[in-house]
Amino acid sequence: MATGRTEATDGGARIAVIHANGEDVGSLETALRVARQAPAELAADVRIEIVVQGRLVTELVDGGRLEAELREATSASVAVLACRNSMARAGVEPDRLAEGIGTVPSAGAYLVTAQLGGAAYLRY
Image 1 (cartoon, rainbow, N blue to C red):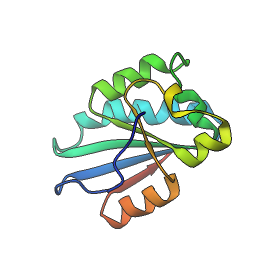
Image 2: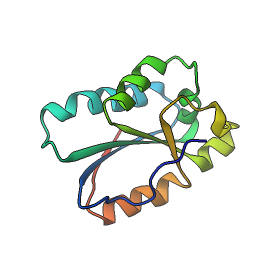
Image 3: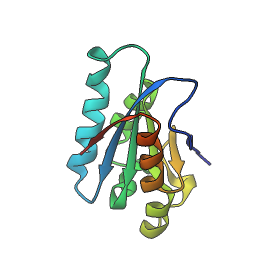
Image 4: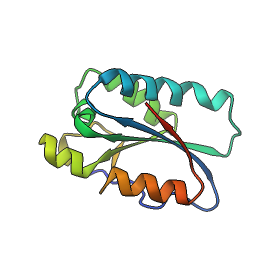
């Protein structure tokens, strides 16, 4: 079972949190593209996380249409985190998530904690 961090700051690292929410797969595709391109423009100590909420969590399953993009992101040290509340509503079991996908109990609470901890926030 995949799990994600619940703390927005990790040893003083700077974090950019990208929020992909809703039903439009285009928002997740954009988040993945931004996460792939951003490191070239950001300082080396900035960690990138994508928090996926709503029906978009169904796109994080093993064998899904974005599997290659998800694998590329997670292999590039981008943390992709699925909201467990959204997973429960969408009927996605944790063992169905693609390899490397983590989870957070609540996207909303995680995002608030991240922002209070100083994380930069982007929404797609």
